[in-house]
Image 1 (cartoon, rainbow, N blue to C red):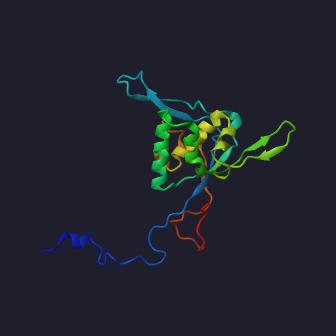
Image 2 (spheres, one colour):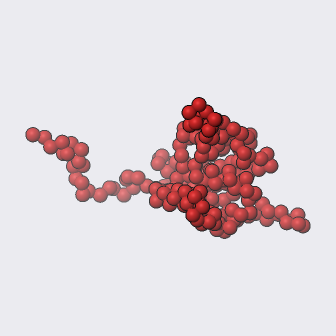
Image 3 (cartoon, rainbow, N blue to C red):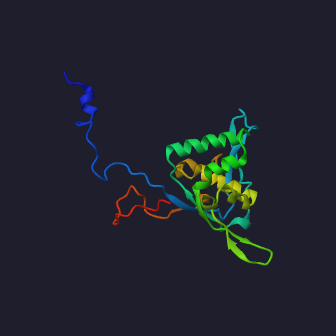
Length: 198
């Protein structure tokens, strides 16, 4: 009689993988651009027949003055980081932690951004990113721009298909530019150098 477990069990369960074989996790950051046109957002519609419907509305956080802003965001957080951030977001939404605690939890997700502060004399100085400066850097953003950025941070790891047609979590995928900085680390490359791992 054949033991079915022998069919699915590796021949040598204690063997180690050869150097370079198997899954290798690299942090991957991508530039995400603020949408150039006002996207729609899917929200609950309590006036629907069963009270459980949804409807599309123009995204209330969108402003033309923010077009051109970009942020380089970690788009593949590991499971532990993602679960921690999601728990912190839930606590923030329930008002059981301060906003600063939630922003501190996600600060390292934003490695760079295109923002310049202009003082009274007209001098321009780039603003350090939250990953460099800490969560306090988020406070320099206008509130509606920060709202968009937090939506992107919370949803950047999701497949584009989940975002299509609108989502209560954020704008449709077509509203943002998700262009990777480098090739996918899972794909073979001509260089042995690992991708940007900030």
